[in-house]
Length: 183
Ligand SMILES: [Zn+2]
Ligand SMILES: [Zn+2]
Image (cartoon, rainbow, N blue to C red; front, side, top):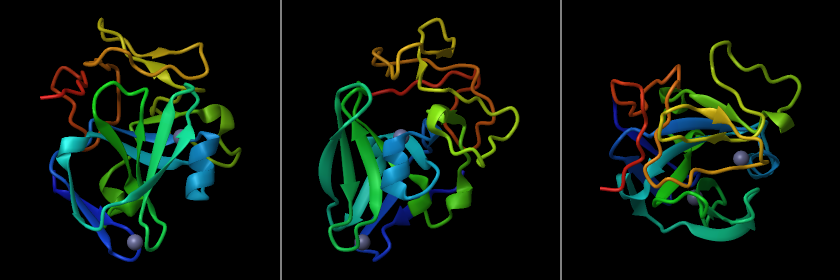
């Protein structure tokens, strides 16, 4: 897979992903709609250490996520482009990089759609792509499940996610399990 590079609108922030993302979410939650001004965000879930930042350091502010835990939003102090988020509920040190900031946003496709309960009615999810009204759970046994809670983030620091289809460019091991590792 070609290296993924991107940056903010004024080019003060440039970044390079040194590994492909673990998974790509299309998030239809209200916060993502507000932050992007669009129907959903496209978030590339990746370990922070694989996000190489050049130029200006992004600024940030904190919102409260659906989990009740902090959602830190990072943006360019010069042009205001939202570049990524960090969720306190995610156990390992990961970022959710906005795929719209890639030089070639078509390089990644959403593997999963989440929070479709607030999906705009004219957005159609492609057939065969998993979609969840809220979030999904990770199970060690490797089954992806719809959570009944409004938002349940993985509490296993090395969650396994299986049955993910349509992975394009994501780092899915050959057995189909995604393991957000830490080292
Ligand atoms: Zn900028
Ligand atoms: Zn969201």
